[in-house]
Length: 364
Image (cartoon, rainbow, N blue to C red):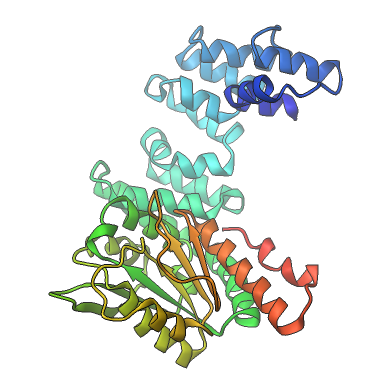
């Protein structure tokens, strides 16, 4: 296993070995470390083939065939071999033999291009139980948002959601069951669609929402309108296309305090958990942080900030507000775990590991 990881992440492991100088546990490990820092020969034929591909000593069909024969990780091929130069039949064999579920999700568009839509759908259907939902939906969103892909390829992305739906609903049912039993009876999402969210930030929100939108009971969006005004409205999201449509909304200022005060009142009335996506660039509210703190003090709230250098304006010192930077669904899951932990501590005064583990079993 160490050798396989060294083959897959040789450059990273080289930095670790040179920086930390770990002592090899035995001769086998010593050979691997020596190879990683380019002081010893490859410890196996697989490592030797990896070096040949990385150094471009072999390429195209030959490189892919050798990679398949020795079971190299797909990352090595993807980083060093032009897929335009390999035959479709050989690529098909690679998908079958050395692609992980994650690789399939990340290479969806390439699989469609090399093998066609019908075969790509068969690949996803046959391996669905091993494909993580988050990267699958991220790839789907990427196809739908890009102008590079044809109408047929975008139709393929929509069919993927239909194929993945039963598994997604099963996972989200478990997630919502944990939320209902330990946190709140409903989930409400508040999405910042002000001008500062335009581009990469709203896209990150869309990528996080795509795998979980079916678990959310209600969606609200907000932005500034006029001088110190607020546009706050409920939106209907019933498909991944509706989620992607959020990218068209960003404009105006950011009345964050006003929006949190409004949605917080709704959440208190409905015993709901709030899931807030915002870059926290408050600039036009008439409400104050103290107003927000008063409304949200008993409302379980997860704030996910997708900005690359996130600010921290929302008061999180008291109450049940959990703030996390992030552009990945794991930020949402981490926030839910923290809220679950807070609830266990506040209601029982102690923590049972079995109770805490429930959300740990949910992977999206």
